[in-house]
Length: 286
Image 1: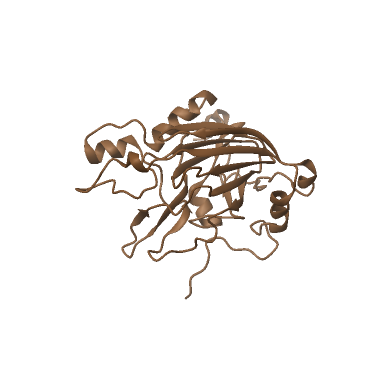
Image 2 (image 1 turned 60 degrees about the horizontal axis):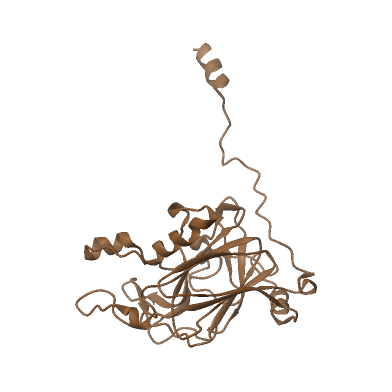
């Protein structure tokens, strides 16, 4: 038997992205910059991206990997689902791929509409860019492996970032590793390597609904230096800031766009609702 995709449908179905629509949104004039900031090294920040807006992440000074979380701005229980996105799209994402949300919502939160690293492809080590394979670095694993505490891992950066929006540590979830080059080796082990991004590279996300983004500039910088083992060094010298821009798209560019809906599953997972009265009546018949 040959292999087959985990999610398959015929052309024109819900997984078949209207590329002309999104290409037109990107190429249309009239964008308005509504927010802009620089995210310093080894830090995190959260910000809102309204539906129909575009968010651009830029390596303004050179390669730097980052960990991205996304939630429904009005309901943080709906958030990016890395595992399902790997199945619906790919383990590494690029232009016209979408990031899907958790059950029971299951809809695209955002569509990638531009990526200057889209032509990177697979390098000689089998690595690709922008992965959903690995998760964020965190102080718990660091303590486990080194016996030391460090407060500026991506997990901690994201925890601090979302607090002003009423979220807490349990809301931080598996990430999209932006600008990060990764793959699986011949032993099926996850590996990372130096980011191929250059100064000025960027990736753009189109918000399908009102979103909350949170981003951490990874304390490992561009991943060009060893982080573990006898040759490990502090990679502070290869840490760089990232640029964030949010744009309002011209209304006429959105005339064919509609926010996505969740699947209309009407079942109850095979469960029958019971109440205390049902149990009481059952006892009387014994």
